[in-house]
Image 1 (spheres, rainbow, N blue to C red):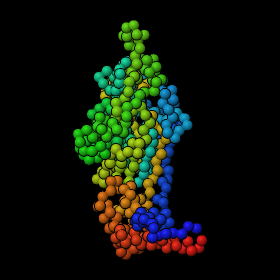
Image 2 (spheres, rainbow, N blue to C red):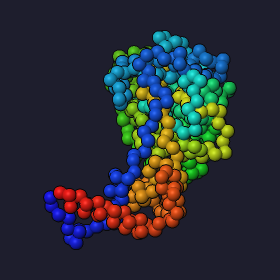
Image 3 (cartoon, rainbow, N blue to C red):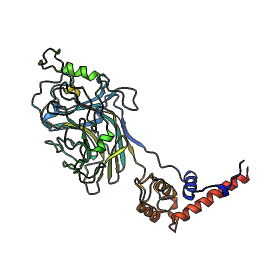
Image 4 (tube, one colour):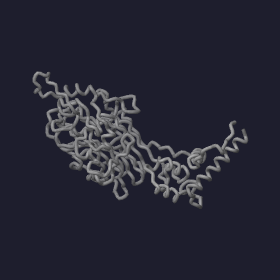
Length: 427
């Protein structure tokens, strides 16, 4: 065996010994337990509660379980080998099989769905994939909301901390008639068609203001707008599935196109950068004690402190709603599909300075801090927090002295070198 030449080694005490200590002395954080899941491959509507608002407009809200989104050119959601999911539609006159395209008078309305009778506790996480579909103006160069898009803008909403019995339904930011908000909810639009496209609802029908500090985009006037550089970098422009051009043309024809074969195509062009629609988006909502976070594609979007909020329960909700009273010219193209929903518990929340989430403050947390992995970003204050709480939680709680970073590093280095020397003597 090759001998260990310590005199010729360049040793970074903290990194070297704490890596060894992390592997040898501390186990990995506990894995999450699945509390609920639905891949929507079968009609599971009997396990869900549908809540609509206004109640008088229930017939114009649609929740279709095991909906086949493949004919709309939508690829299988990540993790799926099929194209079955949950489709939600709002303010749609007629039926799913025969939608009305004449744009009769509608009502600001929508629906939310929740698994029936669930209580997921204090710490849990909801993960799913969402595809928001919409249409633009006829024969336009951009697939975007404008004065001619004839009702293509809709909300998509997700919530935790709800009773599961309340209709979490919002219009253009505010609650609709008979709507409620008994949990912490987040909402966006598929086409970036309103002023506040990314919104947090802190158990209230009033959104957290753009300048509130809730949004990862910052605290400026544009922090909720899809045009903010934060969102345009996250969501590049894309296109609608090609087959939807034919679907658009077949669904409605106003008979006004002279000499052009009467083609009405609302699915041309590209989406505005910063908008949520026409792509599978991974959405994660986490409730860790009083902290509720919203992430899309592993990027933090918003954080709500629920310490002073009154929540209706410990259930989840998914929803859609219209942002206008008017109905859509192409109702078959305005919907959101959800797929591969999973709710898990969270590992125990550790004390301050626990940067690995394993419930104790130890050398592994120092290593995460030194590497800049957690918290992110790191600061000297985080090091002071670790140092002040070292030994709390787990087996290290018996420690009586708070170590200096240098002393713990050198102590673990000595243990590591002793171990290596012992192994060499036995080879």
